[in-house]
Image (cartoon, rainbow, N blue to C red; front, side):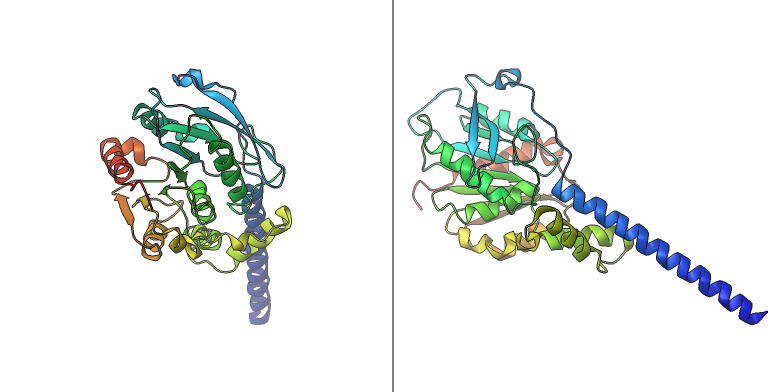
Length: 304
């Protein structure tokens, strides 16, 4: 009787372990697929729908021949040296994700370039890489900006949010002409943020983070482990950087912002929004948000 009970307990334990392994594997496949093939939301609107005067469509071609779709928005009152903001959105989004901030900055006199990253929005491409190949998208956007007749090529600021923030850090390190960088809710590396997500679900990173990235590598044919903004952020200096993050962000923990700030070199600024979660910093702290961003922009030196 005792041996039979032991066998039953062992059998139950084996079934439970196998169930957990299968469930974990299925979740890893799902997450890897989200990384490589996020939901796509094409843009069917026009700049005029958002009260942008004289906004125009632009087409960007990356170094690996991906065609990207975007808008160039001139400032309301063109001047000889209008600065320009190049926006970079997050995964599963499009150029419209930055709309509230973009409208406000345009009212402040900034020209804008808003575009959809590869495999997102209305852009071409068949897979996403969490910032790896998207660096080429930012470089293509920058190359388009510097030849616009109403853009000062020496006064372009890159503004990235979420994955776009991490992408912007890596792109900024390869764009010495870019003047300054603003990043909101960026991650230090893909493996770090993946492990954080796994830990939030099961209480410890275990091996699932590596399984997810291994599967993502298979889906994309790239090495997603190479997405490590924290390794290059120091090279952005002496160009200024502003890092913003919410203290209650569960998608990308605030520890990522702190680590990026500590690794960056001066001039640098860190603003943590108490109670802010992923994607709502402007909505919950609009006045402070505007003040921090304007203070940063107004203090960018004319010459580096």
